[in-house]
Image 1 (cartoon, helix red, strand yellow):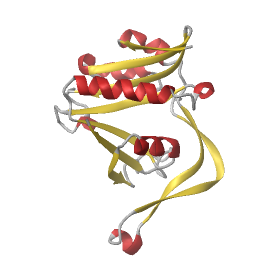
Image 2: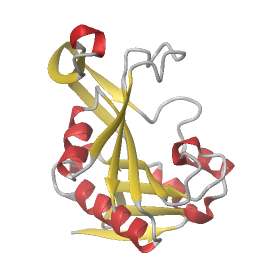
Image 3: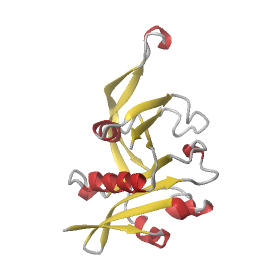
Length: 192
Protein backbone atom coordinates (compact mmCIF):
# COMPACT_ATOMS: atom_id res chain seq x y z
CA UNK A 1 0.00 0.00 0.00
CA UNK A 2 1.34 3.42 -0.99
CA UNK A 3 1.32 6.14 1.66
CA UNK A 4 1.91 9.85 1.14
CA UNK A 5 3.48 12.42 3.45
CA UNK A 6 4.38 16.07 3.40
CA UNK A 7 8.00 16.28 4.48
CA UNK A 8 10.58 18.93 5.29
CA UNK A 9 14.11 19.32 3.99
CA UNK A 10 15.36 16.63 6.38
CA UNK A 11 13.91 14.15 3.84
CA UNK A 12 16.53 14.87 1.18
CA UNK A 13 18.46 11.61 1.68
CA UNK A 14 15.20 9.67 1.17
CA UNK A 15 14.19 11.91 -1.73
CA UNK A 16 17.46 11.16 -3.52
CA UNK A 17 16.59 7.45 -3.42
CA UNK A 18 13.80 8.01 -5.96
CA UNK A 19 15.36 7.91 -9.42
CA UNK A 20 14.27 10.36 -12.08
CA UNK A 21 14.70 8.54 -15.37
CA UNK A 22 12.90 8.51 -18.65
CA UNK A 23 13.21 6.20 -21.64
CA UNK A 24 12.86 8.58 -24.58
CA UNK A 25 11.05 6.84 -27.44
CA UNK A 26 9.56 9.94 -29.05
CA UNK A 27 9.82 13.73 -28.89
CA UNK A 28 7.54 16.63 -29.65
CA UNK A 29 9.20 18.10 -32.72
CA UNK A 30 8.53 21.76 -33.49
CA UNK A 31 7.06 22.51 -36.89
CA UNK A 32 7.12 26.20 -37.75
CA UNK A 33 5.23 26.97 -40.96
CA UNK A 34 6.52 30.16 -42.56
CA UNK A 35 9.36 30.22 -39.96
CA UNK A 36 6.85 30.58 -37.13
CA UNK A 37 4.49 33.17 -38.60
CA UNK A 38 2.16 30.30 -39.47
CA UNK A 39 2.19 29.16 -35.83
CA UNK A 40 4.11 26.50 -33.98
CA UNK A 41 2.94 22.91 -34.05
CA UNK A 42 4.20 20.21 -31.72
CA UNK A 43 4.24 16.89 -33.56
CA UNK A 44 5.02 13.70 -31.66
CA UNK A 45 7.77 11.95 -33.59
CA UNK A 46 9.50 8.64 -32.76
CA UNK A 47 13.25 8.86 -32.19
CA UNK A 48 15.49 6.70 -34.35
CA UNK A 49 17.34 5.28 -31.36
CA UNK A 50 15.52 5.29 -27.99
CA UNK A 51 17.72 6.51 -25.14
CA UNK A 52 17.64 6.81 -21.37
CA UNK A 53 17.50 10.32 -19.95
CA UNK A 54 18.71 10.13 -16.34
CA UNK A 55 18.19 13.39 -14.48
CA UNK A 56 19.94 12.18 -11.31
CA UNK A 57 23.52 11.81 -12.46
CA UNK A 58 26.55 14.01 -12.17
CA UNK A 59 28.12 16.02 -9.40
CA UNK A 60 25.05 18.19 -8.86
CA UNK A 61 22.50 15.35 -8.71
CA UNK A 62 21.48 15.48 -5.04
CA UNK A 63 18.44 17.56 -4.14
CA UNK A 64 20.52 18.93 -1.24
CA UNK A 65 21.73 21.51 -3.78
CA UNK A 66 18.36 23.26 -3.31
CA UNK A 67 19.55 24.40 0.11
CA UNK A 68 21.32 27.31 -1.56
CA UNK A 69 17.88 28.99 -1.42
CA UNK A 70 15.71 29.81 1.55
CA UNK A 71 13.31 26.85 1.56
CA UNK A 72 10.81 28.37 4.00
CA UNK A 73 8.19 28.68 1.22
CA UNK A 74 8.80 25.30 -0.37
CA UNK A 75 6.85 22.08 0.15
CA UNK A 76 8.10 18.52 -0.20
CA UNK A 77 5.84 15.52 -0.71
CA UNK A 78 6.82 11.87 -0.81
CA UNK A 79 5.22 8.53 -1.59
CA UNK A 80 6.29 5.36 0.20
CA UNK A 81 5.75 1.65 -0.34
CA UNK A 82 6.22 0.62 3.27
CA UNK A 83 9.49 2.35 4.16
CA UNK A 84 10.73 2.51 0.56
CA UNK A 85 10.52 5.97 -1.08
CA UNK A 86 8.86 5.56 -4.51
CA UNK A 87 7.80 9.07 -5.47
CA UNK A 88 8.48 12.70 -4.65
CA UNK A 89 7.39 16.19 -5.57
CA UNK A 90 8.58 19.68 -4.64
CA UNK A 91 6.85 23.03 -4.95
CA UNK A 92 8.70 26.35 -4.69
CA UNK A 93 7.12 29.72 -4.01
CA UNK A 94 7.98 33.21 -2.76
CA UNK A 95 11.74 32.66 -2.84
CA UNK A 96 14.19 35.39 -3.75
CA UNK A 97 16.69 34.40 -6.43
CA UNK A 98 14.57 31.66 -8.06
CA UNK A 99 14.22 32.87 -11.65
CA UNK A 100 11.42 30.43 -12.45
CA UNK A 101 9.20 32.36 -10.03
CA UNK A 102 9.47 35.44 -12.28
CA UNK A 103 9.59 37.74 -9.22
CA UNK A 104 5.90 36.97 -8.57
CA UNK A 105 4.43 36.42 -5.11
CA UNK A 106 1.36 34.66 -6.53
CA UNK A 107 3.18 31.94 -8.50
CA UNK A 108 4.24 28.44 -7.45
CA UNK A 109 6.62 26.27 -9.43
CA UNK A 110 6.39 22.51 -9.48
CA UNK A 111 10.14 22.21 -9.04
CA UNK A 112 10.35 18.45 -9.25
CA UNK A 113 8.06 15.46 -9.74
CA UNK A 114 9.44 11.93 -9.90
CA UNK A 115 8.22 8.36 -9.59
CA UNK A 116 10.41 5.27 -9.24
CA UNK A 117 10.59 3.28 -12.50
CA UNK A 118 8.91 0.22 -10.96
CA UNK A 119 5.95 2.29 -9.72
CA UNK A 120 5.03 4.33 -12.78
CA UNK A 121 1.50 4.17 -14.20
CA UNK A 122 -0.01 3.48 -10.75
CA UNK A 123 -1.40 6.95 -9.96
CA UNK A 124 1.49 8.02 -7.72
CA UNK A 125 2.44 10.98 -9.91
CA UNK A 126 -1.20 12.05 -10.02
CA UNK A 127 -1.51 11.98 -6.22
CA UNK A 128 1.74 13.92 -5.76
CA UNK A 129 0.57 16.45 -8.37
CA UNK A 130 -2.74 16.85 -6.54
CA UNK A 131 -0.92 17.38 -3.24
CA UNK A 132 1.32 20.02 -4.80
CA UNK A 133 -1.64 21.77 -6.41
CA UNK A 134 -3.69 21.77 -3.20
CA UNK A 135 -0.76 23.05 -1.15
CA UNK A 136 -0.29 25.90 -3.66
CA UNK A 137 -3.97 26.81 -3.43
CA UNK A 138 -3.82 26.75 0.36
CA UNK A 139 -0.93 29.24 0.19
CA UNK A 140 -3.17 31.64 -1.76
CA UNK A 141 -1.15 31.30 -4.96
CA UNK A 142 -2.83 32.03 -8.29
CA UNK A 143 -0.87 29.82 -10.70
CA UNK A 144 1.26 26.71 -10.77
CA UNK A 145 4.10 26.74 -13.29
CA UNK A 146 5.90 23.65 -14.59
CA UNK A 147 8.94 23.21 -16.83
CA UNK A 148 9.51 20.14 -18.97
CA UNK A 149 11.22 19.37 -22.25
CA UNK A 150 9.99 18.25 -25.64
CA UNK A 151 11.70 14.87 -25.19
CA UNK A 152 9.62 14.12 -22.08
CA UNK A 153 6.44 13.16 -23.93
CA UNK A 154 4.81 11.53 -20.87
CA UNK A 155 5.26 14.76 -18.86
CA UNK A 156 3.93 16.93 -21.70
CA UNK A 157 0.85 14.73 -21.99
CA UNK A 158 0.40 14.63 -18.20
CA UNK A 159 0.52 18.42 -17.71
CA UNK A 160 -1.87 18.89 -20.61
CA UNK A 161 -4.25 16.34 -19.10
CA UNK A 162 -4.14 18.23 -15.79
CA UNK A 163 -5.49 21.35 -17.52
CA UNK A 164 -2.19 23.15 -17.93
CA UNK A 165 -1.76 25.66 -20.73
CA UNK A 166 1.48 25.73 -22.69
CA UNK A 167 2.59 29.32 -22.11
CA UNK A 168 6.18 29.36 -23.39
CA UNK A 169 8.25 27.41 -25.88
CA UNK A 170 11.98 28.14 -25.86
CA UNK A 171 13.92 26.24 -28.47
CA UNK A 172 17.20 27.79 -27.31
CA UNK A 173 16.81 27.62 -23.50
CA UNK A 174 19.59 25.03 -23.19
CA UNK A 175 21.72 26.18 -26.11
CA UNK A 176 24.80 26.85 -23.98
CA UNK A 177 24.67 23.32 -22.53
CA UNK A 178 25.90 20.94 -25.27
CA UNK A 179 24.42 17.78 -23.69
CA UNK A 180 20.91 19.35 -23.65
CA UNK A 181 21.17 21.67 -26.65
CA UNK A 182 18.81 19.45 -28.67
CA UNK A 183 15.99 19.86 -26.10
CA UNK A 184 13.25 22.49 -26.22
CA UNK A 185 11.94 24.00 -22.99
CA UNK A 186 8.18 23.90 -22.53
CA UNK A 187 6.60 25.97 -19.74
CA UNK A 188 3.10 25.13 -18.54
CA UNK A 189 0.79 27.24 -16.41
CA UNK A 190 -2.21 26.07 -14.43
CA UNK A 191 -4.59 28.63 -12.97
CA UNK A 192 -5.43 27.70 -9.40
